Length: 437
Image (cartoon, rainbow, N blue to C red; front, side, top):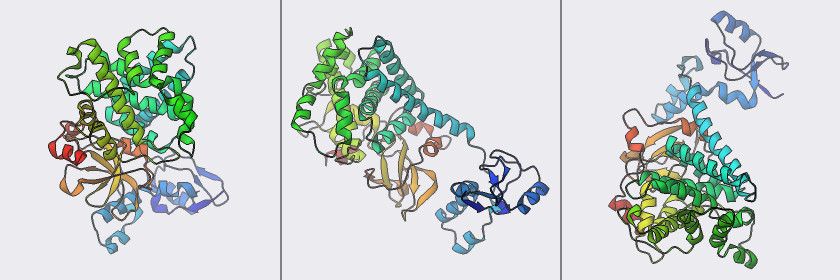
């Protein structure tokens, strides 16, 4: 048992212990969560030489470390920082309810992904239809509950783990496509929310196993694999029709999603003739498919930065502005939750939530200007000039671990939540120019 001694000043009164305390022989003195009631009990405990597991040492010193970190960020003198004693650090309110809520969101998305994998890998099951419809509705419910948190979980997850790529990618595409319809509500009929979610979930139904293999193999797709990829949308739609699904608005979007040509923006997809509306659904699935694929790594290539993915979404195949891609960028912003960025002051972090402008999200800083990892992420409003985003970075460029639950627990300051809700707002001219230029 690898134990380290604990200073008496770290034993706080009336607060649940964040770790278990042991003596030098490895005998338990107090379990995690126990309270030290008064100073006399603390002195008796200190006389026994309390120790903690080495991997728990930073956890019991956390308030002191955070206080020191805040002093560094305020440019306090080294002498003043050195004088800070653990016992002088004020206690912080418990974040347990927030942590439980954020952990629950990440857990529910992870559970949905695993359920979806089981659903999609067994389309011949008699339970396929109810399971698929249940999964699509669960996805929509989570988006409506917390769109930014959901994007953060999904894109963070997709960018760091290429395994089980088929269900991961389908889930991301379905979620983003559905969110475009949810937030661009004057353009997309609300009946299309479920259709787009289902199209995203099933667009690759015929090549799910191949997708998993391609994501982890070191070489580029072989000739045989390329042949299997060809027309997979048509084959996926045919399989769905054979399974008894009859909604052409969904099935044709799946069939055509790799054959969808650029389209101009329209005031309302719902006002279009049915055959034209199908082309818009297919084009949206295509644009989201490409966008999400660029953000996700493969064994033979890293994921690209958020601005590179947004540029691909914003432009059509001829280099002009893509109408459907514009809706996607308006919804996601230039820096969607889960993407990694560097700020003007040198700090780096992960986007926590979208802002009122496409280029000014809220960022959870995880590394200082010197590149030192922070013990706890700090929220920055990049609408402020000194915290403006200057560069998107790829996952391979930021070598600091992102503590997902701690980032999810961060919220914009009271009175500023409106800047991070209801989508990324209007696509401004300068931001659009940066994509094209």
